Image (cartoon, rainbow, N blue to C red):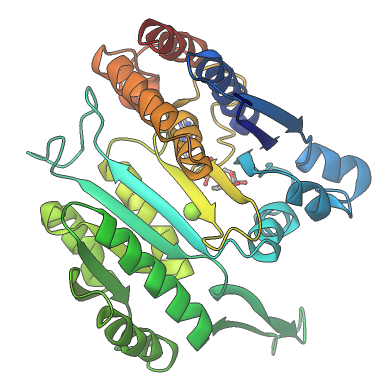
Length: 358
Ligand code: NAI
Ligand code: MG
């Protein structure tokens, strides 16, 4: 039997990105070596702030061509204290998402065993969400500019772009994802009272696409009311679709409500599979804990599990998430979750759990 083989482009980036991606690759190696395993070939790319300081670019000019050879991209985080955040973001992560048309950003959130939500009385199962973020246009289109720079009459514009094609494809993706889940419920988030052009289009297209998904129930929520609902009625939420900016904000809140930013994963997906999709923890480079050995690797493991699922390795994806849950349940937690374990200890425990369940 020819062995299944995947080529992964690893971009650990900056700060704790390097720590958690190293941990994730270690766990992937253990998974690949199990019975019925597969081969993983990793291309390591040292793209990030260090490279920018040295060469003036976060990635080489043929970077996207190199990435296109991969089956998936495993990304850490990018960001350094001495480089403005818009330079780092637009230097590495956004060009990859946009040029590889990874238009669907998928962000699952749930409460892991052994993890306590800051919401009183909210237990495992009460908070189980999938946030779908439009990832190619909207408020992060990069459209706009500045004039009269430095003068009292200086102006800056930041124009949101919403296209029928862009909104329809993310809406269709969100309804499709909702249809796969047990609850089959989608909440469409906008701010279509104040933003009366782009987000009214968003509402109209939601209604049109909904007609094709009779099995999925859906409702609408304004983004400010949505933050309230997430905190006060978490059980009323299943799948959520929102714009690039709104979902960016809501998903950090979701991660915090589920216990820690150090758990939350994301996939930047090209649903048509023309290009490789990119998987990453949602957290950043976390300057405050870098080098201390206490970065929570769980987000990176869950990220790896999503990547395996995307590659068609559902059994391995499931084994990995089960091992992570076992380790959390056993109280082997990093300090962000109230524990005392280090990155290395959590990683070792997950590898041991995987070997044990072979
Ligand atoms: P951050 O996510 O790096 O950190 C926020 C807080 O959460 C910090 O206190 C940090 O210690 C904690 N935290 C995050 N991940 C953790 C983990 N795995 N384990 C334990 N604690 C964790 O966000 P911040 O501080 O706003 O940004 C730092 C840098 O990262 C900035 O340059 C920012 O632009 C960049 N960033 C990059 C992202 C990416 O590459 N996708 C995403 C978010 C931020
Ligand atoms: Mg964010």
